[in-house]
Each structure stands twice: as structure tokens, then as C-alpha cells.
Length: 314
Length: 314
Image 1: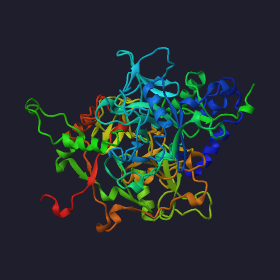
Image 2: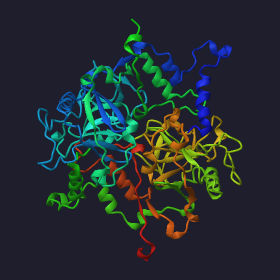
Image 3: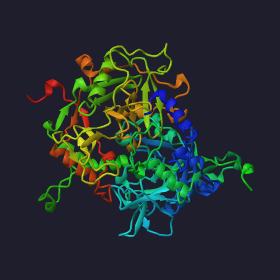
Image 4: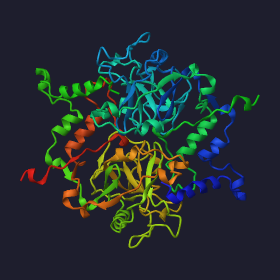
């Protein structure tokens, strides 16, 4: 909401961080903005996205990149990769776009026995992986400001996570860009043949009701701008409204030259802690009031193109 | 995340609420779903949107309807209406669409003195209305589950509101569909010549940093699907990417036959309290786990077409 003059506003912010400090300010560390934190990050603060746990969803408008979360939904991740490797999704379609909620894709003919896409070696459905045992050994950067829905929330391995020490459980939570496996009424009726992504305010009431299995790390704007479907729940009621999926591939199966190599900021680092602080208390000149808090839905985890291999420090 | 078979899922839910109850269930009130609550609402649970405080933003794709909040931003609401009535916005454009954040409109030439749209009788800028004195006489339906950012949150007159009894202040909060007045760095540099709407997860760090003045009650899907701008902060860098605004009108100034008459569920009613409960604990068969909580960003306030005047009960 920087005004339009606010391209200006953006420029001012960029300038501000390079202005010389006044003498009295120079004696103590300057409160950091997000730009400051990222500019000061070390190469070791970033990790490459693992090609074996990355999907490329190829749409007519471009590539959407999904990082999978095998530590939270191992069976679903394995099954989605099996589906991808038997080309299950190629030529299927975006079935649903519901405003401020989800975009979902799968087989438009799933309910018509003779036309439905065959599942060959993968599984059609799986037991739910709504949550898992809380493992203290998994990295967990806890947010200091609490949460309306869960006893503890934070970030683990680049994913938004809730924990309940009392029940000894932890689970991925529904925030913008999270990807899950659609299901029917029975808990074990999902498995990955239909996938959805959150395109609106975090629908946290879905937590522990559906298996989340990954997060979009690039290309959300290709999904979030689909025309909304006019049938109930945002389904497209006319076949011609559906956008076709060109293909989904596991990045590791794509020739190196065609990959999009990304790095994600590690979330178990001092740099990430500083990033959280820069978002809890905005230091940019535009802000007159500092919230001093952050909610899990407002934590975004930086992603950047990986440096080409030959320019990397030896 | 109902599966595709989930049109099915939707149907089951619809059916479920019309199935006969078993004898033992019939003796106590059935836990209500949202559909149950709305079906049982009385005409008096709804209020007409006040035409004098409603804007029609006319886009090539259709009409977006904004309800203004004069009880929270009286000067900004008056000024935006003055701008609208001098046709300030007609022919201006959508300037910015930033994914998971905001869409913003105004004058593409605002910074070019000889080309900028003239402000005639309205004001170019105004003192901020970031918050207001807490008035216990304003209706306030408080949410029971707390909030990460504010001491109290709830709904007042159809708008999401936070309150701080200690400081004696209350303010509108940034949730999906809320509309505010863009500004530059000085707090008093806004005024309504540029307006933005939230199209993503509630950016609550903007609360008390910008003047909110209304809420989109119809047509969000026309705004949320704009192609995202590729310049910083989602600005469009090429003029041809900008969608033109046909006009903005105060509904009261539009001939009766061309109005879209809407009703909003009153938020200071027992029906709304039941609605909140139906959203805190989902009773639909699809849900296996009940959150038992609701966060302000997940409260949506029902809007429906008003019954034509001649069919209304006398």
C-alpha cells in the first residue's frame, strides 16, 4: 500500500539501507530490514532444493515448482512420485479454482469408469498422513507469538508446522502455497491422484483433515490467477474452462539443462531468526507502527535461483 | 480439498442436512453446519447494504462492490465519495497486482504534473485514520479464540475489527477483501486517490499503518485473478498490462434499475454467533477433526442478493 508514488517508496527503502549512519547510530547494530538480512546472508544459509523431492508442474503459462515434504507425508510423497513417473498427470487438468481457498487438479473423468485415467503401479488411495509423531530431532524454529489453532507453530525444514507436546504429534499446516492430497469423505480415500494448493488466507480448519505433502516454491502466480470456477466449490462446469496440465515431472528425471535450480533459505539458522525478527518489527521507513508479532501465515521463506555450478566457491 | 468425486462430496453434505434424524438425535438440537445456520436465518438477521456507503467499481470483466466503513474512517470515506462524484477514477487503471498481497488502482500519471488527473473539490491527502477511540456502544462480536496481533478481535457492523482496551483504541484489520487508501512515507500522504484491496493472507502488519475504509462484498474474484505485475511490489511495468477502470460510482447515484441490491448478514445477532460456532467446529461429514477455534482471517460474512422489493413481506 505504498502509494503509486511508492515505486518511489520502494526506492526510498532501498536507498535508506545504503545511507551512511549517523555517528551515534554507528555504535550499535542497525535494526535490520528483510533486505538487510538477505544481503548479509552467507552461502551456507541456503540449501539447494533436492531434485528427487521436487516436482515441476508444467502449465501452458509456465512452470510451477513444488518442494515435497517426505518427512511429514512419506507414503503420499512416494505415491505422488510414482504417479508422476507413470505419467499419470500428463494431459489431465485444473478442475477447480475457488476464490480465497484452493486450486485443484486431477482427472476430469475420474468418475467415469471407462474414461478414467488408469493408475498402473502407484496406489489409488492411501491411509491418511494428517499428522506424525513429534520428533524433537527434527529442526523446529518456533514462532514466539503463539497461534490461534495450535499449541506451538514454527518452521521445520522450510515447511510451516504445528506441534502439540501434550499429544506428542506434529503436522504441516495450511498456509498460502501449501499442497495437499484431495480426498472424499473417508480419511483414507486420498493418495495423491488429486492435488490442491492453497491460494488464499490460510484455511487452518483443514489442518489434520487432509494430508499436506509439499509447498509451491516458485510459480504461485500461475495458479492463483486462474479464473474462478462458477460451479459450487469453484469447480469448472464447462470442460473448456479447464486449463490442461502439460506434464508433471520429478526434477531429478529432467535433463540437467532443463532444470530450474533453486535454493531455499535454511530455517534452522541465525539468519532465519533475524529474518523473523525483521518481519515481526518492520524497520522500513514506510512503517509508522511495528506489530512486534508474526503469525505463521505471514512467514514467507525466501527462495532464489541457485548460482550456476561453475561460479560456486570451491 | 474434497476430491473431484467431491462434487459428490458437496452433494453428500447437502443431502446430509436433509436426512431424517435418528430418534435419539431428534431429542437434542442437531449441531449446525453453515448451511443449516443460513437456512434457519430470519429476514431480520440480514440488513440491506446502504447505497450511500457503497461503491461500484466497474471493470471490463464486471462490477466489484465495496461497502464503506464511515464509522472507522469518516474523513477518508467522505473524501473517496467526493473523488468518485467528481469522476476522479473514471479511466484510471489497475496499477499493481502483487501475489498473496494486494491489488491497487489509481492514476498511472500521478507523478507527471501536466498529465496527472486533477483533484477538483475533493482533497488530495488527509490526516491518517489508522485507528479510532474505542466506543463500547459500537456493536462488537468478539471472537473467543484470541489473536496473534491484537488483544481483542471480532466483528463490528460487518467489518473485522481489533480492540485494545488498555489504550482505548479500536481499528479495522487487514483481512481478505479489505480496502484501504495507499500512502507514501508520511502518515498523512494518503487520502483515497489510490486504493488497494487485500488479495492474499491477511497482512496484519499493515494494521494501524494504513487507513482501511471498506470491504469488497461482491466481485473479489475479478480483482484476485489479475495477472501479477512483474516490477517490484507487483507494479505493471508496461502500460498495456494495466486494466482500465471504466468508472467508480456511489450506488445511491446509480439509477435504481442498474443497482445490485445486496444484503449482509448482521453480525450482532444470535444467528451470526451460531455461524461462528459452525465455523469453529465443522459439522460437515467430510471433517474428521474439529479445530474448535477460528481466527479473524477465516471469518467470512455472508452476503446475498436482496429480495426484490415487491416480494418482501409487508
